[in-house]
Image 1 (cartoon, rainbow, N blue to C red):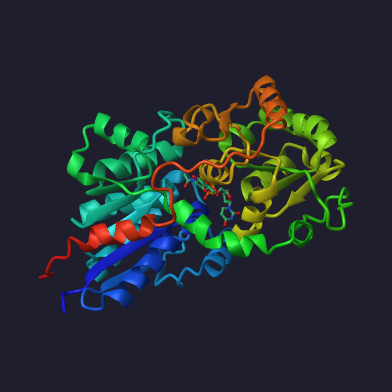
Image 2 (image 1 turned 120 degrees about the vertical axis):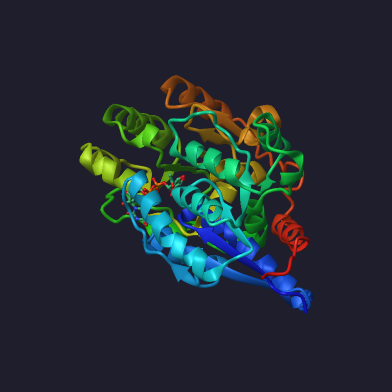
Length: 393
Ligand code: UD1
């Protein structure tokens, strides 16, 4: 038997969990089908997200194995999160001596563990490499740049991401166009999501302080969906206040709006004195952070999705949900209407938001899959890494 290839993979925050689930599954499948070339997989959670609704519920729902190691890093400033993660991760790397460290996405855990991996001379692979918003005000952009610069293997979702890497001088032999692991997870979970009842999801997750909870019995034929968490949208009282005014005075008069609240956003609504306004608005349904299947189910039938999340732009693209993206730029241009996707960038400009919202009401659902967004990306990643089995000293 070959010496097992030892892979240590890292997750830290909510958007990482959907990316690691298919990788863990693909490694298990590989080990079952090729026991002569086993892969040893150590899963590490940095603990950046720790609330059950932001973390544990995703492990259960997506069938991700319990993390072998939990660093318990928790909240803090970026420097605190990155610093604490690097300090704790260093000794893990020394103990486990992996052949590869795999990081996903662009959160603080991704950046911190990339730096430590390279300082410990371990090969580093980045899943979802090459995405660029070209906006250094976003912490995620800094995380992506640092991680990609240090990575030995860069797994990209699409040709635009590969082109970004080439423009930065990344050698061709490090880049692998493999598709999108997020869509592996979406495909694997569509059937289960379809069995869920929309009204039941809303009732089960409702924030009961809201007095506007006169929900329909079962038939809910038209609704809008929203998630917001980026500092550019939620950290300034005037910006968040004008967004709230638009949603309560325009969208909620047309159709119910389901707003799933990130902890940061909820905290800001309260501290900016906006809570009563949203909690008492007819047709605005506030819900806690949703589990993976619940949000997927709501997305499948939403008339329009307002979001500032990158991952949701991708899910809307594949499901065909018109996506009004409250950002001025995106690191995922492949999801934009100009590339046959469904997402339109509107920033937090109320005129653009309103125009795009109204024109999206006339649109039919238009699902689109970029090349290799076929549900088999993680298998391609495992096959690629497995091709590099080497004896350990
Ligand atoms: C992080 C990611 C972002 C991702 C988002 C999705 C970085 C730089 N950003 O941003 O890319 O889109 O997650 O959720 O890594 N909090 C809780 N409970 C939790 C986690 C966080 O209450 O389980 C609170 C924290 O106290 C903190 C706030 O939410 O004040 C923000 O959390 P943090 O992880 O710092 O960043 P996010 O804004 O979630």
